[in-house]
Amino acid sequence: MNIHVTKRDGSKELFNADKINKSIERACFGLEDPISKVVQIATETKLMLYDGITTEELDYATINAALQNIQEDIVYDKIATRLLLKTVYERIFGNYDGDNPYGGPVFPDARTRWQNPSRRSARSRPSFPQ
Image 1 (cartoon, one colour):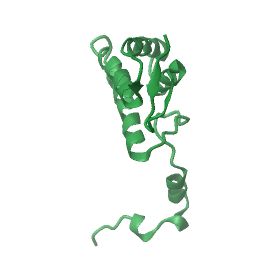
Image 2 (tube, helix red, strand yellow):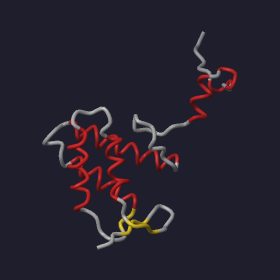
Image 3 (tube, helix red, strand yellow):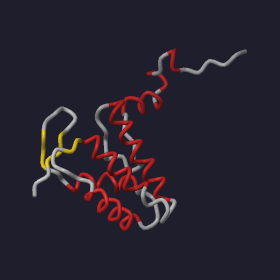
Image 4 (cartoon, helix red, strand yellow):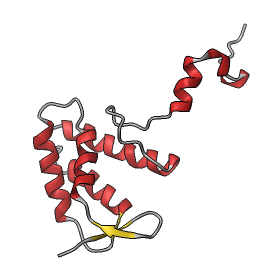
C-alpha cells in the first residue's frame, strides 16, 4: 500500500519514513536513550497515516504520538515540545534547516549580524533609560 503525502504547496509525494525518523531524531537530541524514543514515536505515528495526509497533519500526528507517551516517561513532553517548535518555525519562516543539531533553524544572517558589530543597525542596539 502506497501512502502519498500532500505537501504544503499542494504537490503529492510518496511517504518517506526517513524524513519522519530524522525529525524525531533531531527532537531527541541530547536525551537519554534516544533510539528507543524514536522507534516508539515513529511506530505510533505510522498507525495514524492514511493516503493523502497533509504534512501539517503528519507533524501533528508525530506530536500526538509523543504526547501519548508522557505517562510512560516525562521526557516525551520535551520531545513533543521540540516537534511543535519545528512546526512553528516552518509556519513562520517557511523553510526549516534540519542540519542544526540543536533542533532549531539556522539563520546565518542573524548570526553574522551579532558577531560583526559594524553590521548592526541603530534599531538593533538596546536603549536603556539614563
